[in-house]
Image 1 (tube, rainbow, N blue to C red):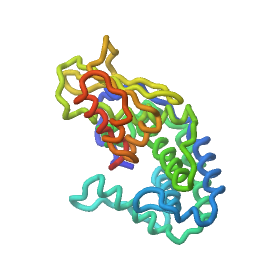
Image 2 (cartoon, rainbow, N blue to C red):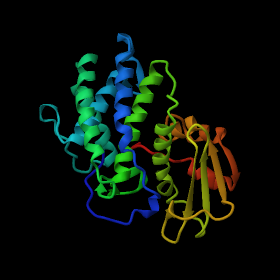
Image 3 (cartoon, rainbow, N blue to C red):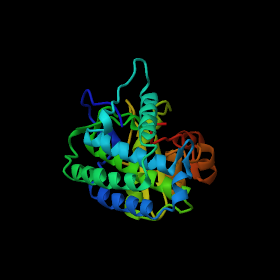
Length: 283
């Protein structure tokens, strides 16, 4: 969730567009399967600090409602004077969860299926070339619609994995979904390096292993770091991560130091360390 866009800028530095529209239907089906398979006591298990599985499910429902433009009992999301974007998002997320604290698992599942189906249909008809909501962790406000939609997909996917982990299940090895998630998360690289000075033409490469193989090269230009430039020769630094480490780092399920311990680094270590500060969520 972010503020409404207030202008248009050239988004080419974010790299090649991603089309996650076909993935929302399967993601919703997988979420419902997970939730329907939970035992009663598993709904109260801790999923992330401060939130249970029940809380995560209610939060996803809130995300659906936000996309649909309607809410329960005239729930209002008003940003207070002087409130930062991050504080605003965390506050309204908690307010929504508190509002649904007494809803039964069956009620949440029914509501998620209804709203999630509507959101899936909404995204299926989205024009990816339009202007979307801002994506703060990528430094894009407004963001191109393809990134706005892809960011939303990563939100749903990440929360499903958090529910799985809280109930003793591993990350699902779905190469297509995982590849899309990591491709989206890596769009944070230029923003991550915004305070890292380097001569124009300096290149950093991040590579991720199977089952979500991918390589991203971010280049220092005169104005900013960019994912739009063609790789040339050997990068100044390269970081290779396994997929589990990569998505957990981007969502801060692990810290940068842990990711660095697991990474294979070639070249300038200081630049690699800067890249491993990547965050692809509102944090």
